[in-house]
Image 1 (tube, helix red, strand yellow):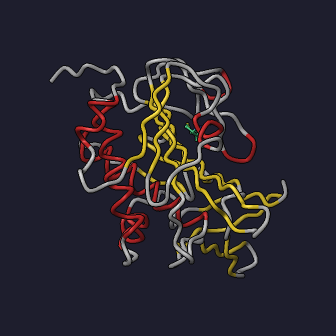
Image 2 (image 1 turned 135 degrees about the vertical axis):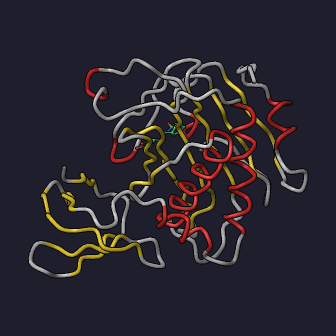
Length: 259
Ligand code: BTN
């Protein structure tokens, strides 16, 4: 099937389940960062806003990195909402989103996607998508009032900057952007509102680091160990080189799988 791969909000709406409350889809040809734009939106209780751009001039990644976001070849989107459960945490939302994007891609392409804790999606040893979850804290009450879930997917990007050539890849699959975005929103709404931890089993079964020797960096200091599990809070359980269990709680940790 040949898809018209132009972003189109009417088409996206067509794929989103009718019971999901969407306030607005903001569509851009170019933007600095969909996450940054998301922070400026005042959204209604219980409604999602979607910000999607054909390219980003200042796409943001984790740990202060940038996310390469060239025109036409990827999906750069943010889901903004304020209906936060009391007991949420960023690692959970990040891992739920990793499962959501994995499920949507696998369903539409038949490919097998791997998840590298906590927020990177892989295909054939190359990173094809990343997730950046950010929150806006209400300074008076010191509570998070809004969440911005940023998703970047390389669909058909075939030339990357020098520093990414060995790391980044693309899905290289004929896939409708509008349909994929719709599926992502549907799965997000489902898993985010599910009271069961069912996402966790999917997350674990797609993990590409459980059982692997890893190097992890805390405050730039390298630590060596074996990733042995992902626990119920979606924390990474590591057996360090001295035989001591280390629990990696935050996504603010950089991990490399030892080859
Ligand atoms: C990472 O790989 O470290 C996370 C990348 C997240 C990229 C997405 S693209 C859409 C949204 N807007 C941004 O500026 N970043 C996220």
